[in-house]
Amino acid sequence: MHIAPSCRLSYGGEILATLAGPAVNLLLGLLWGLCGQYMPLFYLLAGAQFILGLFNLLPITPLDGGSILWLAAAWSTEPYTADRVASNVGLAVAFLLLAVTAILGSCAGGGCFLVLMALWLLLTSLRQKLRLT
Image 1 (cartoon, rainbow, N blue to C red):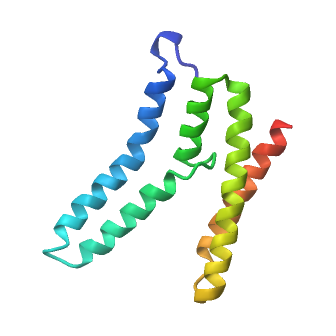
Image 2 (image 1 turned 180 degrees about the horizontal axis):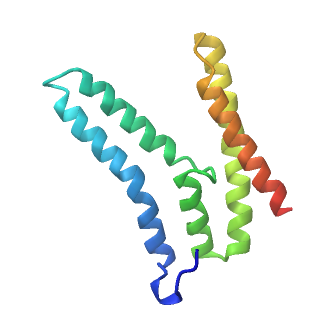
């Protein structure tokens, strides 16, 4: 997509725009939680919104948290360094997430959905890391 230079957002503006998605999830979680006193099903919806919003803030590149990390690093240094920082942090967090979900899944006897999601995030982060080297 080609965007005219006069229409581009600053790094700070892009960070705020990226934060809008998780902020809406957290706001909806709050609203569903307030409605839960009238119908208990809304508590389940509130929890799902909170988890989705917080998960999306993980500093892994395909998620909003990874974009925010890259934008903050590029704002304070330069894009080349931001690529390296976001790649290394994303890979480390994705590996940690895979380890935690695998341990919790084996201890709790739960399903493998979170492990598969963590594996996908790890492979995506690894692919980005290999692309940068």
